[in-house]
Every structure is written in C-alpha cells, then in structure tokens.
Amino acid sequence: MIYYTIMLSQKEIQLIKKRLNREPNECELHVFNAMWSEHCSYKSSKYWLKQLPNKAPHVICGPGENAGVVDIGDNDKIVFKIESHNHPSYIEPYEGAATGVGGIMRDIFTMGARPIANLNSLHFGRYWSASDVVKGIADYGNCIGVPTVSSKCHFYTCYRDNPLVNAMTVGYTNGNIFTSIPTKKGKVYYVGAKTGRDGIGGAVMASEKFEQDQNLRPTVQVGDPFYEKILLEASLELFETGAVIAAQDMGAAGLTSSTTEVALKGNYGITIDISKVPLREEGMEPWEILLSESQERMLFVLDYNFDQKNVFAIFDKWDLDCIEIGELTNHGKFLVYGWNKIYCNIPLEALDPPELKRKFEKPEPRNIWPADINLKMDWLWEQYDSEVMGNTIKGLEHDPAIVRIPNSRKAIAMTTTSNAALCLTDPRQGAVEIVTECHNKLKSVDATPLAITNCLNFGNPENKGVMYEFVETIEGMKEVCNRLNFPVVSGNVSFYNETSGRNIAPTPVIGGIGLIEDYSCIVQ
Image (cartoon, rainbow, N blue to C red; front, side):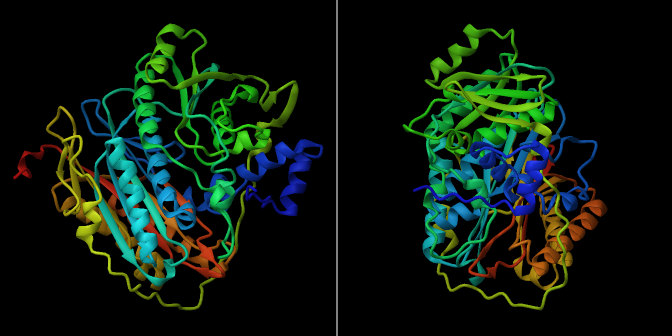
C-alpha cells in the first residue's frame, strides 16, 4: 500500500472549492495537495526569502530557477545550487542520499551546464545513518563521473531521527543558459526513464513531521546513476540543436510540478495526454502518474518547427524515451486527459498557493549535544572520487576546494559552512558568522567571492519558536550579504525536520563560490 495522505487543511480545501467553483475530483485534489505542500509552495518561507539580496552585475540568474548562474567572463558561466534530501535519507539512507545527488545534478544540467563538482554538508546522530548516506552519495557521484571535492560531517544528538543531507553541485558552460520560462508556445516532450510508483507522495512527505513507527519507504525515490549519465549527455546535445524553448527536470511532485511551473512562468496553459506517459508498472492511477517522483526524467518544450530527424536521432543514440505528451496553449489551464476522460481541468492561477504569515516568538533556551559517533574523516573521504574529470586542483582535504575551468586559466573555489550550535544560541548572529566564514574561506585562496546558495534546515514551522529561528536567520543573512555584496542566487528551505515532537537545531548551510583568475599561482 502506498503511503500518501491529504495534508490540506479544511480552510485550504474550502479555498480550492471557491477557486474552482466546484468540488475538485480525486486527481485534482492530489494535485493541489502536492503543489500546496510546504516543499513545493514555500508558503511559510516565501515572504521572508524575498528579502534576501540576489542581484549583482555578475549575476545572470537568481532565485526562482533550477539553479543560480553567475558570469565569470569570456562567456564562461558557473551554475550552482545546494538542496536538501533530509526526509528521504532518514527513511532510506542509501537511496535517499543517492537520489538527492541525482536531483541536484539535474538542476544544473537542466540549465545547459555540465556538472564539474559535487559538495555536501551532512549532519548525523547515528552511525548507521551516516555510513549508508555517505555510501549512497559516493556511489551515485562516482558512477556518473562527477568528482566530490568537499564533504563536511557534523555529529549532534538532535539529528538522530532527522539527518540532514545537503548536496551541492557546481556546473560550467560556455554556451547559452536555458530556463524553465518558455518565450513562446511549443510541444511538450517527456524524456528519460519510465514512470513507476517510487517516490509518490515525496513532496508531501517532506512537508510533514514524522512519527517513528511510520512506514514511509514507498515515498522514497530509487535512482540509477548510469541512466542519469546518458540523460545528461543527451540533454546537453539537445540544447545544441536550437530546438529547446524551455526545460525542467521532474523533481518534487514529478510531472505535475514540471508541467505547471513551465506553463505558469510563461503565462500559458498546458494540455497533457497522460496516456502517452511511458510506464514501468501496470495499473497506475492517473494521479499516481502525475505525482510519481521516479528519477532521471526531464520535461522539454520544443519549438513547433524543430528538426525532428536530428532531435530524435539524439535520443535513439542514447536509447532514451522522447515522447510528445502535450503542448503549451492559450487556455490558461492545467488540462490533463487520457483514455477518453478528463482528469484535471484547473485554471493555472488557481494553483497559486496561499501565503502563510506564521506567528513567531523567541523560544526557551535549549542545548545541543555532540553525538558519540566514531566516524573518521579519512574513511569518509576514501568513499569519494575527487579526481575524476581531471580538473580538481585542491579537493577533499582542503577547504575551500578548487576546480579549474576547462580550457582556461580560471578556477572556481567552493565551500560549505554551517554551525548549528551557534545558530541555536543566536540564530541571527549565527547566520552572520557562517556567511562571513564562507566569504573569508574563499578569500583565503585569493578567490573573489561571487555568490552563495543556501539550504535552510529547520524544525516544524507551526512551532512559533522554530519560526522565530527561521526569521532571525533570514535577518542575519540579509544583513551580512548586503554588507559583503555577496548575493544569494539559489537555495532551498527544508522545514518539518521534527520527529515525535523533537525539532532539530536551526541549521542553515551556506554554499559559496569564488573566482580565481589564474590558478597557476596556487598549483604546486
């Protein structure tokens, strides 16, 4: 039996009825449930995130896209982002961590960039969780052939039932940047692996607290790094054809989020024939197809006049499905049909989630205790291939890591920083300190700090004390980023890191990059 719950409040259900002017059907209710989840909607954090500085002359693309993009000169661009896979890694440490790496790498190559480095920031309270997570991260990254150049591990008891698995990927391109915003109508294509039942309810699961006896394994995705590798190569080849109008990976909420986001951003409607979606399991319900989070899948909007022979030859070569499942329209709806039946007929504007203004107040002081885990860093680093691709100048034993840009004298310095103990004591000052530390680390290798990405890990936002910690963290980040001219160009919020009433310490993780104009001065 698939674990999946409707988490919508009665107030939200009434709002849905009002917007539709009718009762939603079963499939539509599942769509709203996913799209209005905290994980997809950012309904508790959106207001505060808008306050973070995200602009600078070198910033090409900021928050709102799959990843941030900065210009480093000579048409060279760096694309990077950090993201969490906390809840899945608690339920199924190996697969949860592995698919977290796969997901963040798709965010990078979806924008037309080739991943050149992986980093991670991990927080544990149990040994078995730590060892399985590290193996999952290492196996996926090693198999796809992207070096893991930095790994940070922290051990505190508050993460016993809520490990934090934050994965960061840095990519490079000298070509065009592709976004999820279509500039004109086109045909919608499904590309990649077939759709199964794995991961159904993943977005909703990531938006609720846990009880220790829950059976949540069916909500965790299962990844295939070898399939991701061929999807990466095929996607990058497709971008070169000039056929792509918009691109979006199928992450949280799967086909639902990818199709609706593309349509909303372009101010279009979208029509999908769900019967054309390639399946690997029989008897899947329409809502299961729409919400599956099966891995290694992409959505492309292609020009009506694209060279079909050239495009299809790419996917034939890589033995990947490339199937037309719909098109962008002017009707302004999310229209899903198949097998002679309409399953969703939702005005896209109705899917816009309500913004929550949660109350907050300073919590009572609490402590953070180190976890008794004997996990040596040399064992950790031995799991990762940090030299593959041959561009790593300084890797795992150095902080920051340094990776050269292909066919250039330039290199990128990169690091992650966090300090849960300090953030628990004073979340505002803690945020200031970890952003400053990130900035200083980059400068320590004569890199010019360019921008940051963030992964904001907190407990239950319905708890006023947790919300206070979040708001104070944002205020601290805003203050220091403005002072240092260090823009936030991408990121992720992970709420509901709570199990059986126990919340984690506030744990913002900062990922930063800096530019080294000539790496010859640091090569020894």
